[in-house]
Image 1 (cartoon, rainbow, N blue to C red):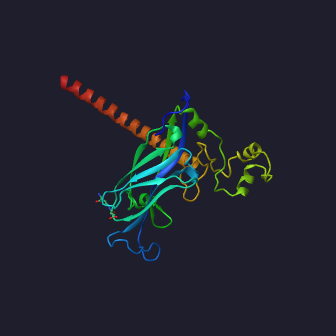
Image 2: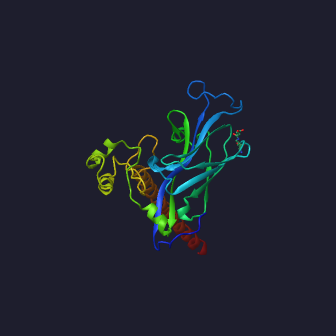
Image 3: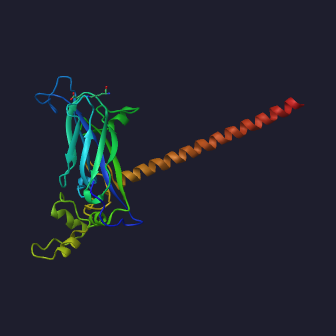
Length: 272
Ligand code: SLL
């Protein structure tokens, strides 16, 4: 960790959404053949990852990630260095589920200590019903266990604050034409002022997110389940559950009142 530089920006909290988790696939001759050299008892290939929401770059705040795997796995502590625009990924094969310790190392400018989160590797879908189990499957067979998280930077140091807020931009992986539909003018090519280009690009494209922003996508897209749309569905589910709970509460209260009344009557009769 680098020594702190500058002052902390008081009263400011900055958050950045990110996604982490595992994706597993059973070996099968046709769709996922076992590569040579993989031990006989290994049943699945799997990946653990930390990445930006909508696959945007997060290496401007996250420098490296250490994945601590089960001790039965050779060389079980792995460090993955950030590469701009890429997810922090680790591919493995195995037979069992276990908890992975994911240690996040921030960029030196942040002067933040590393933080660890824990994730259970899922090889088998779980749930009370087949339908629930099915929600863990993607692309016909992959078992996904993904989590949305927000990294909070509380009163960041000034240089880090500058990095965090140095200007939202469209993800590098969005083709230039993708910006047009969001109302931006096509870039006028080389030799123009950088500032002007940045202004043109500062537009959210097709419901996606801008890099170096705290946005989440407006809608779901393949492989991107965390969005405003998902949030709305979850809110609706919670509201419906609340209505149900209130109905049950009302019913139970009615039953209690009836029983109390009956008890009172019985006591009165007994006293006669
Ligand atoms: C279980 N408590 O019993 C867990 C342990 C260990 C998984 C799971 C070995 C991989 C390798 C592997 O998959 N270990 O040998 O490279 O389910």
